[in-house]
Image (cartoon, rainbow, N blue to C red; front, side, top):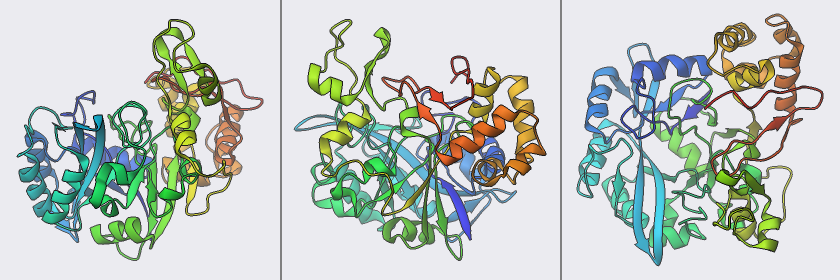
Length: 409
């Protein structure tokens, strides 16, 4: 059976996240989106742990379930700020094999610092130490470097990252079985590094709200006989049952190219290499993006077809509708169209991946919207300019006028 996984989400207790995030809302909207298994997010935070204890009413094979059957894996993202050669800022996603193991992780991380300060706790501890100590607690605990290439807080980020997993995790690097691609990179970009051939590339949303334009916008698909924590981890570690990922176009991500938001300056890596890293408008340092870092570390030329796993490149349905209608993403007009189009499939991901032209024609009369969905699915979309320094890229589809300036965050 195929399962869509989004194992990197947050609670209302994490900084910058929706105050309406709850297990009930996550479960409700995951089903609308088409996500079968969610990460709990933020299980170290005391208030959220209490909610998990109330809302996750049973556990089977390491998967926790709500009363209405939504599946969750115990998950938290932590931020590490420390010195190793120079200042480092790394985010790690931690998956625990059951509630008992999650409790042990909470107890152990509590020795590093306060757990009640933020849903995404911050510790002055090196990543290699975390990897070694959590493995000693339970070998099935999985550590995944989050949004591995973004400039801020990532294992390969231009601001404070490393040039290899080995450099970051030292003798525990063999315990890192996967990295999260993040919105600004995809499988093709990661396959330019032979050092990552043995590492699974996974995608999750890092959702800061439960809305369908955030939840499941990136996800991972597995095909296993029976859902369990062990089957999920086996797919990640060995590839058995691992199907692939759902990604947004990497140039749509907010850190794909180099740039300076305050000066509206965006440029490709070749320009940066030729002219330096100073903003040509104000002279401040540019935020060096993901494509630059991939180019810097790659030992292979650009590839056009994945060799090691599959990927589907999509844009969330709400965002497509907002761009076609030229309306804010949370407006009534966009929601009305969203619910109409959703009838073309079992859920949003099914619509985006599988709905035919005839399926869509039965739900909407907006021909531009139908063409946009089909074009994005087939890869007939460009992003100009690409995302940079916290600004999303601007999609363009031949023959369709997209209004992309007011869809909101």
